[in-house]
Length: 270
Image (cartoon, rainbow, N blue to C red; front, top):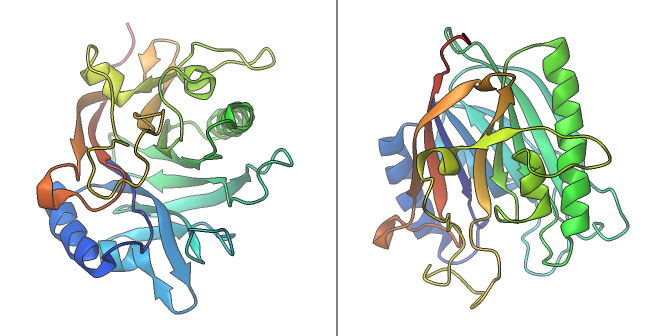
């Protein structure tokens, strides 16, 4: 299974040029599942469908951006899969009075993949973005993890969390997801694909070197993640590769770089 995640940067900048480059590049990457953030969907336009074409099933966030400075109307998140969806649900992440200006959410899709993969729960997680809102991101990560635990307990399968988490590996919200932090006596453990395949290399997906980057010194650099839930014996899917994509010259299509991950089922536990 090849997994791709990218914050598309909406329709900002030279959108038509960026769209053409994305379509060319994604054809070569040939992902099976894609999580996109900041896609624009309005009654007259569906950016994700234009980017991906007709070869994918799409699940779209319902409540989208409207009226926030710098964000186009209709901006939200999209999950795409070459395999059909079962259940699709959204987890409301407006958990404090500081998140009202942002359509933060987690879009959860049940992907019905063929054997030997089987059911894959995909959580396209898009929490609060503001630099000083880590308390909100922690609450949001815990809310998502609790809901995913309930889902997988009732309907077992793999669980992948992916998206623009607006926090790096040292943040409490990401440390919680990777099993290094406890929230109200509750913990989970997800294995980062980047950490599994690049154990000695710091992740950077939001960098001043990006020609589309408008923030000269944003403190958090590795903010886009793909991670798989661990069972008692470790991750249920093994990341065989994790590459930064849309990051070189004309391949760059957004103010974020993307990640492409190849997964295979983990061998049965001893």
